[in-house]
Length: 115
Length: 114
Image 1: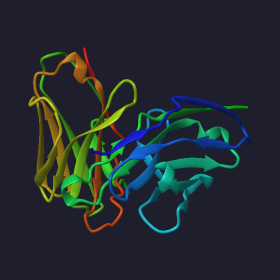
Image 2: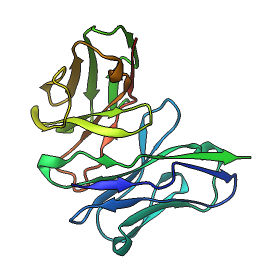
Image 3: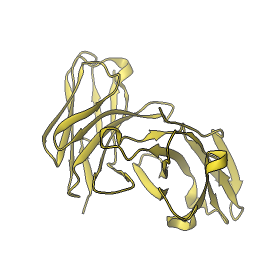
């Protein structure tokens, strides 16, 4: 069964600083990987996804993530954080099997942005 | 145009009551899901339906019963509500014709059991 680990529960960065949120996954085949963001009281919005091809993927709001198979990682990055980026970030892994298309989520990383 | 909608957004009820949460998607997807987010923000799949057929049924008490009247709707009925059922419930949808299994989420329903 697949699993996702987000080792950082809470991260605080200053506005304008760079950001990296870590994600490690466990899955026997090529994973489908996602990053979602959840603002307070809101639903989940997809930031970016990876399922094949270029291992560096670009997403919305200036985010990018790099898939590293050797490290089983899919870390999320942003070069310059804005105050509006404060939210909860979830990494997720999915499969392509019709019988098991649910996502397995990590426990989330709460991002706080200092002025 | 709301892609995945849920009603109600908030639900406060007493222990022992029966309640339902409704979900509708207008994306033309053939697969729908219910996820539960607990107080620690952990998200876990509960159920998944594909073309109105139940394909995932995680370890969920049988007090929870999903119903899919058609491909665009997936409702969640909960009997005999317990304090531990308090959580945010998210509906999501995807298409099996998509290679990457991207899922679109509704805004969530915050259930509080008193």
